[in-house]
Structure formats: C-alpha cells, structure tokens
Amino acid sequence: MTNLLMMNIQMVDLHSQIAEIREELDAAMSAVLEQGAFVRGPFVAQFEEELSAFYHGAYALGVGNGTDALQLAYMATGIGAGDEVIVPSFTIFATAEAAALLGARPVFVDIDPATFNLDPTLVEAAITEKTKAIVPVHLYGQPADMDPLLDIAGKHNLIVIEDAAQAIGAKYKGRIVGTLGDVGCLSFYPTKNLGAFGDGGACITTDDELAASLRKLANHGAERKYFNTSVGVNSRLDALQAAILSVKLPLLNAWTEARRKAADLYDQALSENELVTIPPRAPYADHVFHQYTIRVPAAARDDLAAHLMACGIPTMVYYPVPLHLLPVFEELGYAEGALPEAERASREVLSLPMHPHLLGEQIRYVAETVAAFSYASVSATL
Ligand SMILES: Cc1ncc(COP(=O)(O)O)c(C=O)c1O
Image 1 (cartoon, protein in one colour):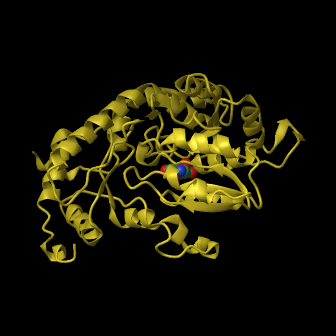
Image 2: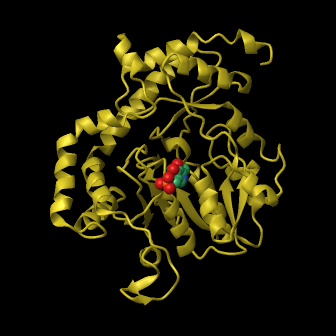
Image 3: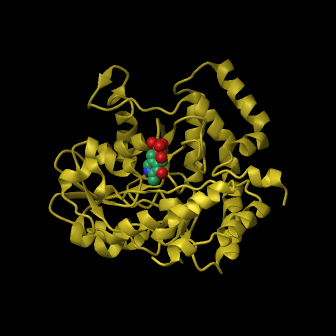
C-alpha cells in the first residue's frame, strides 16, 4: 500500500472516470459547439434513443434533473391537490417534495430493514380513498420488492412511479427497474452511476399516452409551439449533457460490474467485523451499488465516521433524518417512533467510498481502518 493511493480515497472519483474517456468527451463537447443546438436538437434526440434502447425500447424523455422527472411523473399521472402518495420515509427529500409541491400529501411508510426499501407488507394499511400512487425507491441501487407492490397497486387501482435515480440498470427478477411501474424516474446528477457534468434526468415509460403527456408537460404543456393545452413546466436535458451521457452510457455496464466487484471485496473484507453489518442483498435483486452502505450501532456510527475521516477515508450518511420527522412535514403529524425502521436506519447507516475506479488496496485499507476503530468508549452503551 502506498500512501499516495490511500490519500486519494474519495466517495466518488470523477477525475479517474473523466481521464478514462477524456478524448471522447472533448470530441463530443466540440461537436455540440460546432452543431450549435444547445437545447433539444440532435444530441438530445440521439441520447434519448440510446437510453430507450438501454430500457429495451421503453420511451425515454430527457428532463432537467431527477426531481423534475418525479414531478413530471406525478403530473402526467394526474396527481395533484388532495391526493395521497405512498412513499418510503427513508429516501431523499425530492421523492416526497415533488408530490407535496403539487398539493399531494405524502403518506410515509416504513422500510424493510433487510433492504432499506419500502416494506410491501405495510403498504395496504396506508391506503385510503385518497391514495393515488405508490412510489418505491430503489435505494442505494437495490431494487425494491416490486411484485407485491405491483399486486397491491393492481388491486387498488393505484399508479406506480419508480424512483430509480440511484438504480440505473438494476434488475428485479431479471427485469430492468424503471419499466416495471407506470413511470420510472432517473437522475444524471454528476455523482450518479450515469452522471452528467451538471443536472440532468429522465422519465421512462412503456405507456404511449403517458409518454406523450410527459413530453408535453416538460415543454410548458405545449402540444406544439405556441399551442399550450395545459400548464406544464420547462424541464429539458441540454445538448451538452446529452452528448456527455452518450459517451458514458456504453460504459455503464462495465462500470456497474466494477462497482459489484468493489462491493464483493468490501463484503469479504468486512464480513468478520462484529461492529458493522454489510449491505443486505435481496435474492430477487441485481444491485448496482450506487452506494455501499453498512450499518453501525447508532452509538458508534459518528465516531467511526470521524475515525475514518482522520485516516483519509470520507463517508456519508444517506439519510440522517427520515422524511416523516423533517420540520417541513411536521403538520402531517408523525411522531418520533412512528416508523421505527426508517428512524433506526437514519441512526445506523454509513456509506463507504464507492465508485468504479476504487482499487482493491483501497478497499482493504478501508476495511483495516474500520477494524482498527476502537469502540471501547462506546461499547458500554451498545
Ligand atoms: C433517490 C433519488 N431520488 C431523486 C433524486 C433527485 O435527483 P436530482 O438531484 O437530479 O434532482 C435523487 C438524487 O439526487 C435521488 O438519489
């Protein structure tokens, strides 16, 4: 192990990724400058076609970011004031925010502690006459248990919107997530598995009517120029981002494989460690490891993070506050203890560095540094 390698451990290493494809990126960006259509135009159309092919022919619409993709999915499926939308409490704010912005009420449901994803066994009890949709989030890159969720949705005539922002390419029982419900939502935020050099996102659907509606709503509700038939938004993937994503998409599967190898190495190196619990892998899931997230007893989690940081290893907590306990949702009336697994996860999770260019030596160094953590000071409270 050289110190140089160890000093360079990052949560996400975009520099190595850029170095791998620098010439192609430069050429793609130059081509956009030459061509001159910066919004819409051939580069966006081409990327949408490539993304559609990646999703086995499903319709793909490039939009401004993942949050917009969610908002557009909610709008296109008719979700609005007074409706209820079932979302896991343990996710990024955007999943619920986009529904709340439209006047819908997020109804928070607890997660399955074995997967960090929406617990299907708790969903039916949350359904009321106002429920319009279920929104599974494939958190950290692992698919939610979709079959029972789709069964419940079918039984109660509910829409299913998949928040697949962290799970591009992940599969559920061999089927690619994002196409299992009515609309799938992607984010191309730079640190995502497929990341732009700015904001970007996409909606995926196999429903032609929804495809047309999404396209219209993302373009000010205009069916054609200056002919607006509804109130929409302005949300577009720009040509530079599309050209960059077209360079990266063909490499995504190889990068996902590299993430899986890194996750396997972490699993091996950490499995004997009594302090940490390695990320669970559901039997139905092909995980794409957007994050490698361990559990650490709550009393030790922040101390371990500080210890790792002192040794040059960054970590992150996704997410420190479950959504039902955020001040913004106070008026919804959830008390502490209402969704115990989401609350416990918020206290216990710790995401370790994860990206396709992580080296085996770096992973072993992370594991050794975790093993060297002395938790004597906290063990009394464990
Ligand atoms: C699960 C999830 N949903 C939605 C989003 C929102 O995406 P964006 O940041 O592109 O708006 C993100 C990423 O930030 C995410 O991780």
